[in-house]
Length: 124
Image 1 (tube, rainbow, N blue to C red):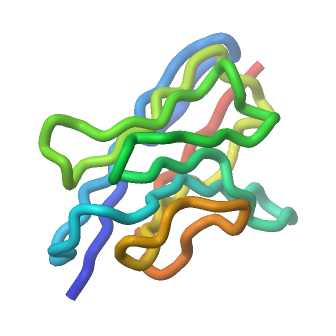
Image 2 (tube, one colour):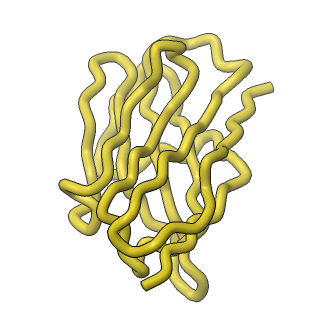
């Protein structure tokens, strides 16, 4: 079975940084879209950043562009989200997700497989 496990959440001050990790196991394909989502209390889940493992192309939501970076680790089954210049409005549960094999990223973020989430809290 495909599993995604996030880690790295926690608390930070505004202006600080956190790095989230997501390890995917049980997925034998090498090319698929992976993404980070977040959901704040009372708000809808939103796509934050996505990357296509086939060519490492990325896309970011306007709200995080220039502050967050999505990338794969040397172990290709690990996805990261480097979050810099954090703001209180970045406070949310963050989830990683993976899409179907050989389907590039698009405006519709991948949602075939999900992790359990990791909480990020940013204080002012």
